[in-house]
Image (cartoon, rainbow, N blue to C red; front, side):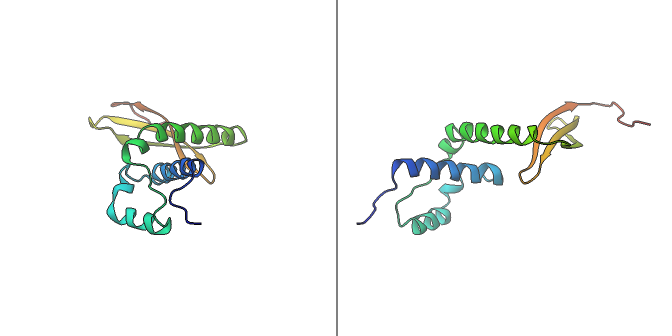
Length: 126
């Protein structure tokens, strides 16, 4: 028996996995439109799977992945007895000084929480 397409349930899971690979790896939404990536996926799936396009990756799949990651991170944070936070500063697009706050989840990386425009305020605690 020759499979000519991926079953619907598997296609949905593969699309979700493809989208998660984009988000968690900081890759462009259009990565699966690259001809070399298309050729690779076509060969390993024996022409049965077509990954999602940038509009799907940047649309409904983004929303679904965000909710899945948020739920997982929230659960992991609730289990932390001593959460680790990262505080740093940077400039925004208008060259204003910003303080950025993130939380580090072991095994998952750093997740942004908030930022604040501090302008010319002094952050020295002494």
